Length: 213
Image 1 (cartoon, rainbow, N blue to C red):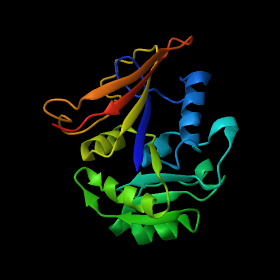
Image 2 (spheres, one colour):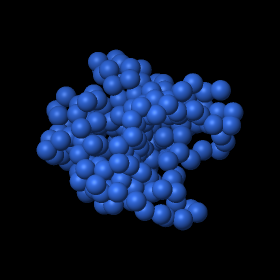
Image 3 (tube, rainbow, N blue to C red):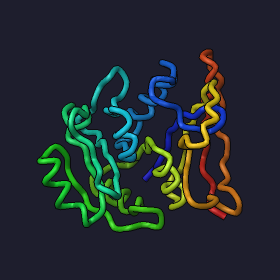
Image 4 (cartoon, helix red, strand yellow):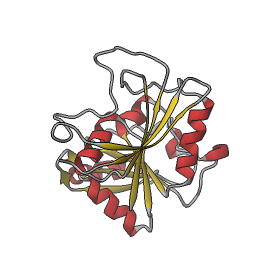
């Protein structure tokens, strides 16, 4: 399975808040969704925002799987469009939260329990689930802890990064990948596949991910 990760950050590496990306950046994200069979994002992103993971022209492909992962099981669903528009999403959580989430979501989503992994829940188990559903490509849509875990487990093949013409400087702001230690010795190496500056001042970068050293 091919796994790609998409993210937009300020030039200081903080994940950009919703609404700061350009229409060009949004179009790029939607086109990547069109090219992949499923999306996954962390529950904190869902708590902060109201994502639907739509493709180009605002369409929701009935065959495409949208999913959320949460070790804590703290999944907001009231007034979240993800649970009321389009096909039912998949919610991944720990085995201990499986029954509680099934009762809480009341059929609004398919709940799937995951074993533990080295950095929370096992993302390899997520890939195995999607392979079983016939999915051949997965888009990881953040946030920072999910990005870190996916890179640490070595499941990411490519990264699509938008560097936005802003500076945050907030020491408490989430970065592209937040975790307890270096991803590599001392870094995880990337290979630049393309670099495209656009008229909005943004820089569209595309990387392949090297092996952990």
